[in-house]
Image (tube, rainbow, N blue to C red):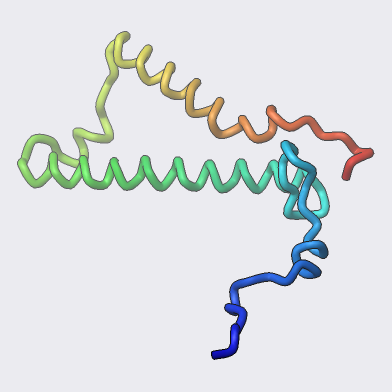
Length: 112
């Protein structure tokens, strides 16, 4: 039998031609690293948004199915001070997660 290379194997020449970032550095996918940071932020924001919406849809459906709360009740909820403090802490954590990609990798115009 002949030894046939698998299609997913790369030759040494192909591997050498791939321009990988230096060991330990952040990969860059677009021409400008700031655009990479913005894209990472957008993807993070989209994931966070969908997770929250999905959770809210499920919770609202369950509450309404059990006749525990109406749509109008949901719109008119007033938070007490403890709930506001919890919400504010969650908001601060959320903002940090969303903007972390922009903060963690300073832009150096000489490396773009």
